[in-house]
Length: 369
Image 1 (tube, rainbow, N blue to C red):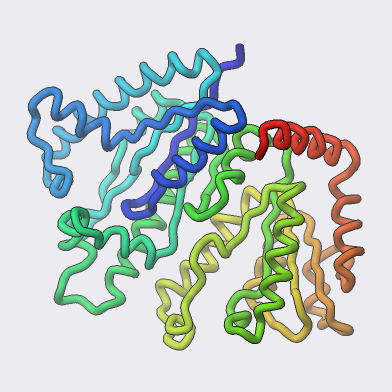
Image 2: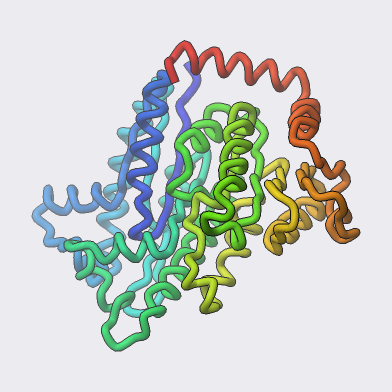
């Protein structure tokens, strides 16, 4: 029997990655896969209770570093030993931890390199959530005490927590990517609101093409553009029949207040997230303009990123004329007709690939998914 896969999941506090893992477990179980989740923070608390060691979750970061290091070492040793038994039977295991913390206005490591090396995961995944959703979760009763001093001090401006959460998110992504690169393993950044199908396909259907789905966002707000947004959703649904879709809308878009008041920490994070976190594992981009006359500075840069990293870009634009700068960042045809676009995209995927898709879809249907 083939040994089961091991995944190392990271996220900052408040990201709701546990809910994403739960939804993934449910999907995997419905398709006959067994997945075991080890939340290393919870295992540390469990060992502390077992050994009558005082550990207050709300103030755990006040503990001496050596105390936390020893408890973490014990938790990882115990979880790894259990997980290896499951892996021998072909089960998938998920280790869930922080690789960094922000405490007393300084960043600290959340795990030792030796511990990651011992776990030797096959895949690294960092989950991110929208910054305001993360802030709301951190403010919940029972959690606010842990983060009040560093993220929500009363003497700071209202934007202060947003900036600090974005900083921590960047450090967590960077350290997870570094660990994956050190071990030569795949690394993905996934929004917590993404469909569990995305992670399922990354793990169990690695043959699938990964497609970044770009669309205008900033200027498609309001009732005026309801039909355009519906066309975007319809095309995404069609693409998901064939490829793994990465949709930037999985991370909450900026509100009208954000658009009226430029806040640079948030504005700077969005291009970084899309261009350097979500796009790298993608094989192809579909740039979809649902209607003529809608500009998208973000899509222009995303198309250029794919072009300059030697990847393919399929652009649908229904306008009669386009700028030379619009056509420059793609070697492929600019499609005016959506039916032609779909036909050529399937041609690009190829007959052998589509046969694999058909077999997978029959399996899903048999499993009543």
